[in-house]
Length: 432
Image (cartoon, rainbow, N blue to C red):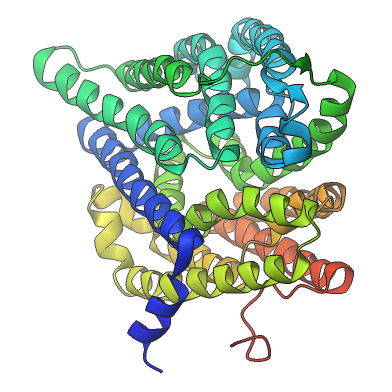
C-alpha cells in the first residue's frame, strides 16, 4: 500500500475532516506568525526579536497561571454531555477567571520593574507594562477559545486562535514601519496587543449561546477539582517549553534569545499536525470515555497517531536538510542556530511518534499523573539548562529541551499502555 492510499484511508470520516480543517487553519495561522517574526527580525534585528520573545513568554506565563486551569477544563466539561445538560458553566468560569486575571494584570504591572532589573534590561520594563494591559483580554480570549473547542466548533476556534491575532499584528507592523519615521522595538508588542484585543472582542460574539436556557451555576469547587490539577500540568508543560528562553535571557544577551526563539518557532512546524489533531481529538476522547465506548476510543487514537506520523515525518526531513536556508530567511545572524534546530527537530519527530498521549491522559481522568510526569520533566529541564546554557549557550538550551521532551513522552506512553491498554505510539504491532 503506497503513501497516498494510506493517507487517503486515514483521512476518511468526520474526525479526519475536522482534523484537516484544523490543520489548514493552523498552517495558515502559523504562516502568519512566522511572517510576523520574519518582519520583526528584518525590520528590527535579533535583539528586538529576543526582547519581544522574552516579553511574550512572561505574558503567557502570567496568563496561564491566572487562568487557573479553567480554559483547559472547559474542553472536558463541555464535551461531557452529563455536565453540559445540567449546569451553566459560564457563570462560574467567567467570574473566576475575570477576577483572577485582573489580579494578575496588577501583579505584572507592579513587578515589571523588578523583572526588568532581573534581566538587566531597562527597556524591557516598557514592554512589560504593555503586556500587563494585554493580560485580561488574553486570558478571556483563551477561555473563549476552549469553549469553541469543547463545542467542536473547530473553524471558529481556528480563526480566533490562529489567524486573527497574527493577521492584525502583521498588517499593523507593516503599517507602522512604512508610515511612521521613528522605528522603535516597542512597536512590536503594541501591535501584538492590538491583535489580541481585536480577537478578544470577536470571541465574545462567536461564543454566545443561541439558546437562553436558565441553568444553575456549575459548582466552583467541582470546577477547581478539575482545573487546578490541569493548571499544574499546563504550568509545568509551559515551563518545560519556555524555561530555556527565560534562562537564556538571564545568561546570554537578547540577540541570543532572539535567535533561539526563531529556532523554536521553526521547529514547531513539526508539531502542527499533532496540535491540529489534538484540537479535534481531546473533546472526542472525553465524550467516548464518558460513554464507556473504549473500543471506539482506542481505534480513534490509533488512527490519529498514524495521521500525525505520516504527515510529520516528511516535514521534519525537509527542515533537517534545509535548516540553514530556513534560518537564513530571518537574517544571516540567525544561521548560527542551525545545530540547535537539528536537535529540536529530532525531538519533535519523537514527539510525533508518541502521538496524542498527553490528551489521552487529560481526557481519561489521568490528568494528575500527567502533572506528576510533567514535574519530573521540568525539573530535568531546569537542571540541564543550568548546566548546559553557561557551557554551550543556544545549543545547550536545545539539548535540555529535547531531552526533557523525550523523557516525558516515554514515561507517558508506558503509563497509558499499562493503565488503559492503549498504544498511542507508532508500532508495527498495532498497525492495521
